[in-house]
Image (cartoon, rainbow, N blue to C red; front, side, top):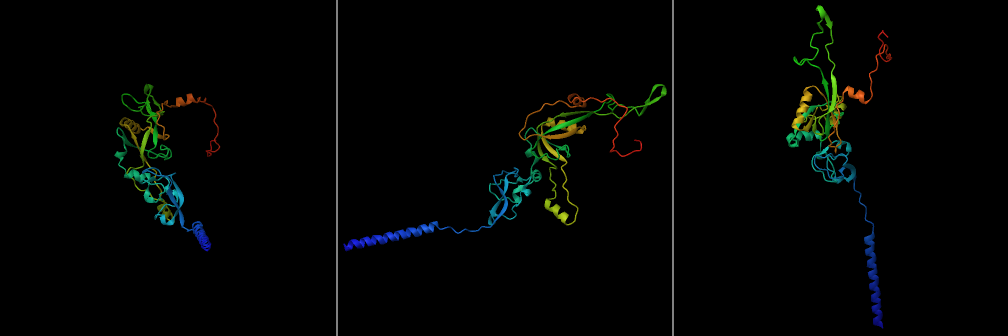
Length: 307
C-alpha cells in the first residue's frame, strides 16, 4: 500500500511538472514580439518590369522604403521621370535613380540611324514648325500622315514664265498703252498624300544638349537671363524610296506640308478627295454674296478721318 501511494505521488509530481513546462512554453511562444522601428522614406519605385527604351511614365509610384535600402541620388518625385525612357531593363520593385533613365533625345543621339531603318525603307528629314508638327506633339515612334497644299499658277508654255509676261504697261491699239495686273493669284489644292509614316526622331540627330531644369533655376537665382530651350526644327521619318522622292519634290516646289498624328494601332489607308475652294463651297453650300453699294463700319478700327 505504501509503495502504491509513493507511485501515485510521483505521478502527480510528474504531471504538475509537465503542465508547468507546457505553460511556460506556451507563454514564450505567444508573447508579443517587440516592435522594431525602421526609418522609412518615400522614393520613386518601379511597380512593374520596364524594358529598355520603354517609357517609364505610368509605371512608377512613390512608395515608402527603408532608408538603408535607398541608393544615393534616388528620385523622390515623379516629375523628374516625366517623358523619360528606361536606359536599361528595370526590374519590378527597383528604386529608381537618374542613371536608370534617359531622354528620347539622348537615346536618339546615341543610336545609329541605319540600325533603326527597316530594310526597304529610307530615313528622310523634314523641316517642321509648331503648326506643322501638331504643336510639337509629334514624338519618336509616332505614326503620321502628310497633308500637302499646292499653289498653282499659269505659265507661258514656251517661255516657262508666270503669266502675264508683259511689263505693267503693255502695248495697246494704235500705239496706246494699257495697264494690266502683273501678279497672279494662286489656285490652291489640298490633299492627304503619304500615309502611316513612322517617326524615327524629332530634332537634330546628333543631339546638342539643352539646359536642365536645375541649370535654368540656377541661372534665374543668380540674376542671369533665363535659359530657354530651343524647339525642334526637323523631324526624321521612315518611308519608301519612291515616297521619299515625293516628299523631296513637294518640299522643293514650295508645297505647304503639315503632319497629322495617327492612333497608335491604326494602319488603315484612307482615300480622300482633293480639297479646293470649289469643293468647300459645294460641300457646305457656300455661295458668293452679291456686290453691294455699302459696307458695315468696323467700330473697332482706328479712325482715319474718312469714315
